[in-house]
Amino acid sequence: MTDPLADNRAARDAILARVRNALGDRDAHAKANAEAYVAAHRHGPRPAMTADLRGRFIERALSMSSTVESIGAIDDVPNAVARYLDSLGSDLAGQRAGVCWPELASLDWSAAGLSIESRPASGNDRLGITGCACAIAETGTIAITSGAATPTATALLPDTHVAIVRADRIVSGMEDAFALIRGEHGAMPRALNFISGPSRTGDIEQTIVLGAHGPFRVHLLVIG
Image 1 (cartoon, rainbow, N blue to C red):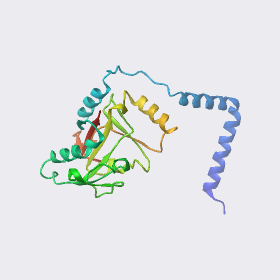
Image 2 (cartoon, helix red, strand yellow):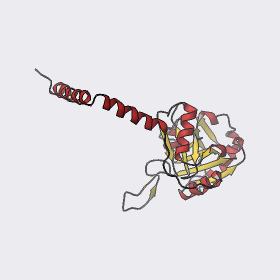
Image 3 (spheres, one colour):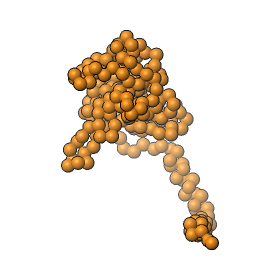
Image 4 (cartoon, rainbow, N blue to C red):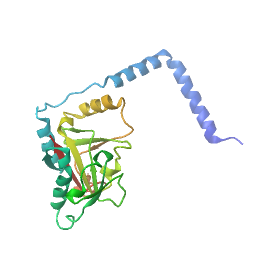
């Protein structure tokens, strides 16, 4: 008894083989040109950008419904997180537990009255604290790479996402973010997440609803 799926695959492969043979060198030349074009990472037209990337990033982040606080050093993060939680109102001010990336585990969370675990977020965690690979001044966006040291669930699952942004990691545009990450990683990571404020949707009657498929709140702590 013949296998119809196998017969279809064999017929498809035979047709594609004839096409490749007919194209010959032209196919190889076109492929080489395409690969060279992709490898060049050419930039298209870009808007003018102010020299104050930090100021532009904060302005655009606020316009995307993020909240922002500037702090002086990484050690200031726990107290800044505690202040932010206190500002959320009586229904959330008592929330003092959450998760963070491994790079933040050594901060003195308990001194700020917080119980923060260094692990990826689960569905029950309401607060996630992360860093970011870089931030983009043009759009007020943060970029997060995937990996064991940077679990994306910590940024995507909790109701509240607090992200630490170092001022010297703010780049002008998306193209600069890609170039920075390629330069540091050697290649693009398995996944790269761009976050521009809280998650939102306007599917129902074009009414914007925050927290539709991710955090209700994104708070950015800008260092430097």
